[in-house]
Length: 103
Image (cartoon, rainbow, N blue to C red):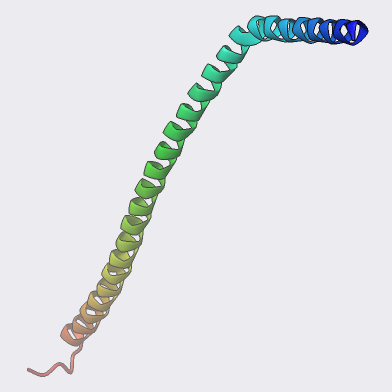
């Protein structure tokens, strides 16, 4: 029984030393873990900020594209109107300069 008790005591001591070493190792690495955690948190905040900026830029881009499309439609309409007025002007000019023009 004494032998078994000694084995258990030695095993307990060995486990206790191992746990103490683990605790010391964790204590030594704690500042690094804390720094990494803080860096990760800052990175996450920056990612969120950039995501929001990207969203706003996408919305602004969409507005600009819609405005561009509206201006393109307006320009097309204006060009067609100009062509019509130029044809009408040419026709009237021919009528006025024609010697057979009758009133």
